[in-house]
Image (cartoon, rainbow, N blue to C red; front, side, top):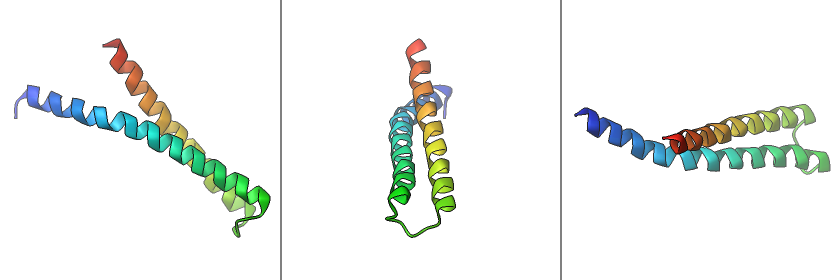
Length: 79
């Protein structure tokens, strides 16, 4: 495998990973918020501490994936 083939594969993976990171980031943020909000209405039967910790972790993880996708888009614009 030559350098050109390797570089082409990285670009194709990056082209797929960026929208996936943004989409999954939004999804994780939404699910985390739903977990925290539905606990406030009493519709889930898990302890409040666990729902807030789980929801907070999902929001933080989703924010990281969303940021990583945006950062990749901004780097590709500069090129």
